[in-house]
Length: 391
Image (cartoon, rainbow, N blue to C red; front, side, top):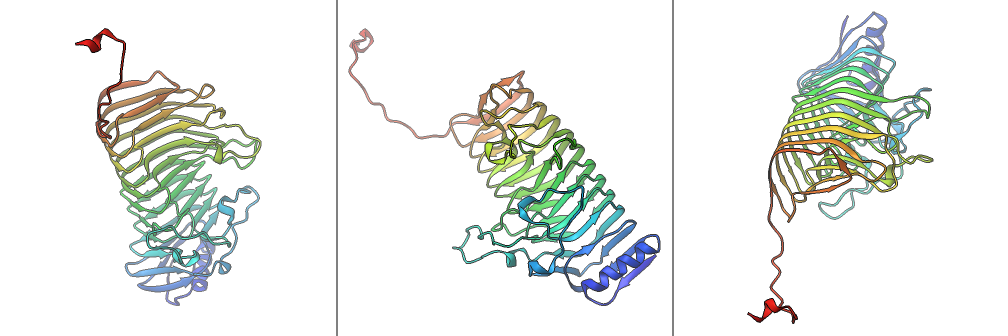
C-alpha cells in the first residue's frame, strides 16, 4: 500500500503510518514541503519516504513530545525519554528519501553565550531524533538528519540494521547531540555517510538494562564515512557496559578538534555499585585519515577499575596528524592485550609519538609516526666535580 500525505501536519503523517501498517505494510510518502510535527511512531512493515524538498520539522517545544516508555527499556540516558521518531518491537521499518528531518536543536538550549562557546544545557529534557528499541530489519537511506536536540539516533537491542548515504549534521555548539549510538545491536552496517556533530559521531555501547541480562554489541561494519566532531569521532563503550566484539571500521576520514578513536573507561562513567565490567574484543580500524587536535587513538582504563578485558584490537594503515600522542594505558587489574599497530604514519605535535602503560603483547610493524616539536631549553651549566668538566 502507498499513501501520499498531502496535509502538512504530524497528525496526518501518523494517520497514514497507522493505515499502511493496518493494511499489511507499504510506503508513506511526504512530498516537497514543510511538515511540522511532534512525536511519530513508526510501525512494522512501514517505510517513511521523504521526497526531495520534504522537511519533517520537529517542534521547538519539548513538552509537545511523547515519552518512550517500554517495560524492557528502563534506561534513560541524559534524563530524557522524549523522542521525535520512535519504534519498539517493530520489523521491516525504514526512513528513506532525499528529504530532511530537522529537530531545531538550538531552540532547546540557552544560547546566550559568548560567540563560539558551547550552549548551556537547559533544565528540561531534550528530544532524541530517532529512538528504535528491539527492532529488526531497519533501513535508513539518503536522509539528512539536522540539529537533533539530543542524541540523533539511539538504536538499542536492534538487529539487521542497514544505514547508507545519510547525513547527520548538528550545530557544534550543542552538547550530547551524538550521531548514532549503536547500543547492544547485532548485524549493523553504516556506510557512505557524513557526520558533523557537537558530541561523538559514532558510538558503540552495550548498556545493561538489567544487572542479570546480557547486552552484546557485535558484527558492526562502518565504512566510507567522514566524521567531524569537537569531541570524538568514534567512542567504544563505557566501563559498566557489557560486551562489544567483532566490529570493523574501514575507509574513514576524521576531522576532530578532540580525539579520534576513543576507548576510555574512567571513574566518571561508572554506574552505581560497579567497579567496571566491559569486555571489548576483536575490533579493527583500517585505512583511516585521522586529523585531530588531541589524541588520535586512546585506549585507557583508570586505576582501580577492573574490566573483563580489552584485547585483540587492530589499527592498520592509519595516517595521522594529531596534537597529542597515542595513548595505550591499562592498569594492573585491566591489562590491555594483543594490540596491533600496523603501518601508522604521520606527525604528532609533541615530543613523543606514543605513551604506553600496562600493555601485554603489543605488536608494532612499520611505525613511522614523528614527534619532534617542543620547547627548546637553553643550556644551563652547573658546577660539577666530574673530571669531564676540566677539559
